Image 1 (cartoon, one colour):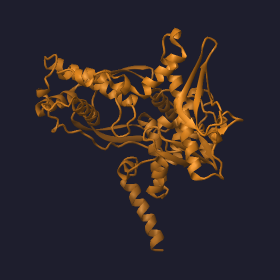
Image 2: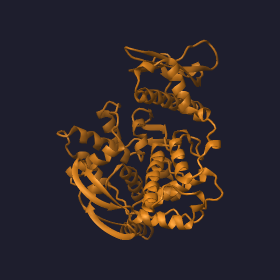
Image 3: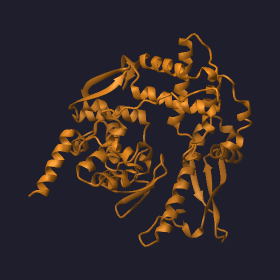
Length: 437
């Protein structure tokens, strides 16, 4: 399967970007709503021109935005193709319709507001079933897969909660402070079993953390608010949230991971490289595929973050350059985030990143302190946290670090800084030495 991007230059000032999806058994065409000035098209590469150093900022931004739009549309076409189970339906008309339904779901919603179910669980099911058509109120973009997953999981908890109470459904008038208290107690004491962990049978019994309970309460509030039922009262629904002692990898540990020989475990070799790319750029997992494939100019990479749509420009650390050159600036397609989180623990264990770390959090309604080897606590989130913390410890201004990481507020940024009281005291002592020589 191949996707070609092209334009038909008819000497107009602006023309539409076209796409061609073809294989041995089909040849589909799609004229998009993305428009481009022919002067921004590179006839040699048959793609949008790469920004050069001598162009104006306005033109550079236009080229970056165009590239992001075309890349995003190409990814959408690929995703729709692989999600289509019936190859007989692969026609140009199908492609045009599938893209339009994804980009403009509101056009295909038929009388949804007039046919809302009147009971809580039937409405929640209706809400979840239509999650693919819903948009984020802040960004107007379709909901992310993670957000939809939270709604689905919350619905399952509500169904089981109803069974626990001997009910099959609730009236909206029952959504009140008592319902909230009972539901929180149910989630807090609920046990669940993890049967497998990284390919091994473990059968571990767990209870939900305070943050997990808060996550489900937040999802419930959003869903109930969507019903616009004045009888339901969620004013007392407090969303729990506590700071947890997350770990980061310091620069010594990052180099320890970099220098370990994974030649006998090539999948761990790639996982290690992906981890280091994120840990030295401050990027999110969702933007991993943009590093090396976006515009690199003057040893900097520029792209627009998927989660916030914020444009960032990141200087390339020597480790990042080394990894990109290793793959000839064409990183392998990333595995799932879940598999990555499993494998990076294995990689860090082999690299002996195993200092004992104690962390405290609320689980099952109780404050619990656990001690585990560091590799057990590492995930894709550790990368971004490591970048922010290491740069902070290097003495870089927080505003400078935020301009790279893309954090919009100081509050959200500070959650990623994992510096102990001892480290803060040592940093102040060093500053005093400079101040009072």
